[in-house]
Length: 372
Image (cartoon, rainbow, N blue to C red):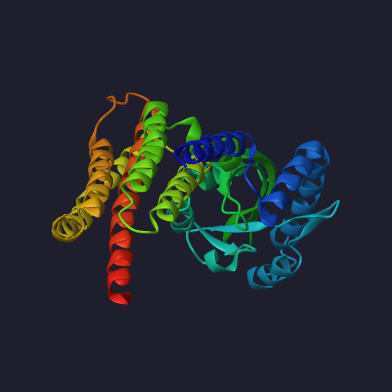
């Protein structure tokens, strides 16, 4: 039977390797639409720019010339802001300059819940979605656009900038085509249409397997088969064979799911903050460890074989907890910091899994006694 368990382990590891290596990130329908739009925009960039420029002149002229007052113009652009090119839509955004401040108020956007916010407020809200991004939204972009439009004397200004794609919540690099508006009362601002040029979130995403400490991963995998064989050999209950196989499968499913997880590359400050949170969370395992220490004492008096089985798993749980606290190196750049944070996250979760297994195993043991 040991040979069968070892064969099962080898097959699981081979399957893990194949799936992690070749399984690609599954994209949602919204992400596929964004990908198609980026391809379309890059292929037709000049045509799109020309159409947007022509339309910007048309809609801002209605206010700038005095044909419409500001309230009429707001209603007009709300109804007529969409530009359609080859089955793809482009939505206008209008920013109103706040007098005597280097800030702007969003007076029109197809994402209704941010309309009415200032430039600073909207970017702060969107920035909360970018904790896993090495790039961020520049707070001075709107002022830069407006200043350039002032200098260009009401001409068209084109700028590259970063913004969050509303449907996917991905950070996207965009090309903004903008034009100034101003009514007779002095209300002024600009209208901008954006062209998607690159999905930054997708470009800088990676699998955890690429960053995790490979030695720790190897040791973790070996421990799963060691614990499995110990559970089987001790035969603490009549279901030990099933329990051993179950542990082997569950622990390796965790290893697979963790290493196949995608994440976007973040900044050093964000990664350092995540690492600090993981280390502070280690204190929470002390609660589980305390309960499992009590379980060990009860098993020592009632079932020596199960005590040995639980003690081994408990020791490995402590081992992974210590690994979660250990500094493998003093990270001086982002790749090392990423490796350390992801490895600590992996070992911390594994410690929780082992402690959880002890508790579930004991509860099933108690249930079997009650059933008798």
